[in-house]
Image 1 (cartoon, rainbow, N blue to C red):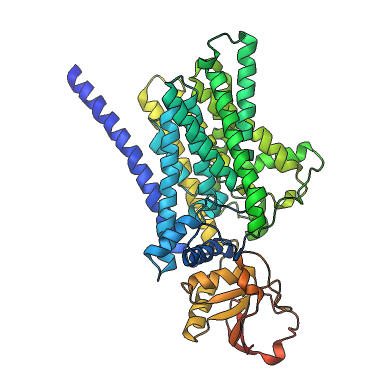
Image 2: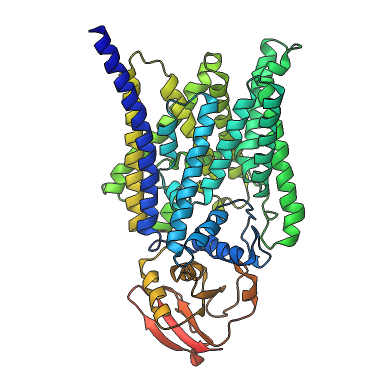
Length: 533
């Protein structure tokens, strides 16, 4: 009888472990299904610009281009490298190229979490947590993660860096320590090449948290001759190394790359008044990441979510998820030395990120431009905190721990479903009608034309690169805008061209209307003009 119970227990454990990997695979496939289903209809120009840049990079053969107007950041190692690969595999289908690139990027993020979890001692929950990170549990996670991919790269950098840091906290041979230190320096340098983001989202808070842990350790007992084996001292050294590597990459970005490539820097940003309300609003943006359906930026862009609609009701799961993150963080901080050092470091680093980033986001002079997406690189640490609590919270029966994990997974599914339904019904910038416009332009043989930002790059991707669009400041002047397009667009297109006016863009008289002819219009408000140049 005892043997039968033991066998049943082992079978249940194996089934539970298998369920975690099934969950991870299902989350990955669901993300790809979302891109496949909505990757054309709800595409916006920010997303499409990365694909247009990747096509240019393939033609030039590099990872950066002097023939491109970048935005506010020069991201050296970002998703355009995977888009390059996608276009090499599927040159005739940019949608298939995007699907391949996003699949690889999602797999990279999952692998980064698994790497971190192995080092932090969170392997039992690793596939569950990695799968959660691939789910569209909140608006920004869907918009700039699962669908757009922008922040998945930053999240992978956070997990790779933190995974290396927790490994360096443990004493090891000189060779292993040297290899880990070199890897951390290389990863943090690469992250710094992308700009200041990872310094702010991880490296500086990590150093601050490690300094606090080291100070508390010193107050208990001064460090002796064996300090090199002390986890607090090793963690602080790893944090300083990460900061140095990140600063080195950022200096190359600012001193070398900025002189060669065209992008807008962050020099206009400055400190402004510090208010408690501003800090609380910033922290509210962080909590809204986890599925709350009324993110302040989202409300302004797509309108309020009715409470008694399906997305509104499912949004309650986002509130519970955010509450679980808060409870997990408080629990981790209160456990102190009762937890392994890697888990203590996870809690302290998450708290330091909230303190440092909350103050920075609240005190920048362009606070209106700071939205919840700025917090996305911190989300993996919040998921790790939930995983740590789920694994370590004192529960007598394994069935209760599994029930806790299942409840968290159910909340992720509910929040993801509500977010996806809302996004499909009210995308912030994408338009179902624009795909029809792109098809009509291709049928009529147009290859060059003008449009404002939210239509320009989308037309190029929807036409698989067949239509080249000059992005303009406004339709009245047709003045080229130096933002996310080729520098060759400084010269206007010649020959037969079109001008696409989006909904509401032709409310005033257009100076060039006398030499143009309206050749297309639809119920959505899109109008196409044709003219010779």
